Image (cartoon, rainbow, N blue to C red; front, side):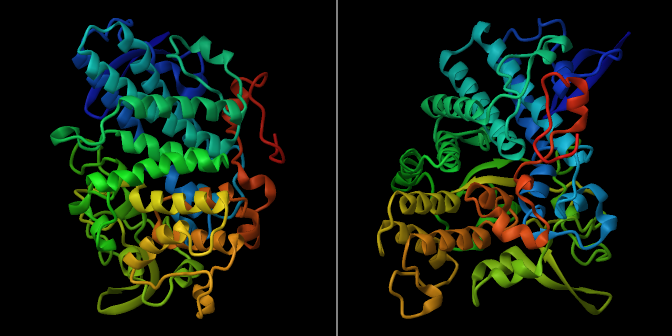
Length: 489
């Protein structure tokens, strides 16, 4: 039995057939049968296919929802204070999520849907007659997107299926079991190296927002940092920093200039997921998702305040006195019907939605301050140097926030960073407040091996460093897909 299904993604309508008699392994197969495999013939066809791949970044299991649930809610940065804000995110918040939790299943399925879109581009573009420079660029963009998606997956789940070819029929999906994280990281590094070799540093006009050479190098630097390949990380990150002299990237004078709809895709931005309200489902949900339940129209003027990402008291206290970033990032109260209500909430993503869950706010995946702090971390891991170059990159970020330098022999104990271990904690602290509510905190703590030490008071156990594999995937292919250790089967 066949059903005709229409997929709408990033302005591209694609018709494909899907069998209702067979489960869709990895959620990859349905997009594969693009109108009899005869759809991709021209450069315009490939442009549309690539647009669909970018559209995957907006899926619920990627940057529409899952990446901030995992990146911040899972950490000590934010919490759900009202269980009515969602049982499954609440379980993630409290380290009680099982393999049947929708966060795991949606994250897994939507990432593989998006990976299939990139694989379609990479498979089909080789036989399309088109400008070779444009073909090379499209290939680089697709490889960047695939690498980003696999980087998310391997950090969230550990070993995952590695699919680098277009799935042409549902049965093919059963051939893929979980590959080692090491092999997945090798593919990520290969894709990013290839992408960096062909992508431009910047675009103009309607192409602004596409993956760039700087995005590929920055992400590769983060990949190497995660693998503890300090010298390779430093090499990639320094290459991005060196572009500052050519006016490609810069730390903007004021932290407030980084955020808000008017500031999107600016000089500090390296890669953002693009959203646009009033455009048939292309808007972002953050203005509504992050507003406190019960706040009416005091925080977000249109739509429902959902209370799904509320800054913790610990996050509030993480800011030093006079840190200019706090006011831009969060507030401690709002006024409703003339009454002041004490309640923490995020303000980085404020705006007026066109409708509920339909705002203009982009999601920043990579930005220059992140690169500076990663480079400082890599330099420190290669060898601590009292008041050496790593301090300079750390203090660039602090100074922009209105804070004093940290140094190795500072008379102020709070500003003293005397050795390598202390510098690690200084970078951890700076990343927390600089990148607050941008989906980095959980991944930072896991990457540095600090997650259990920091989060065990909140209920974290060692095995929680990776999420459970969705039970649905195990049920579909039990011979090849097994559960992560310590999670019930």
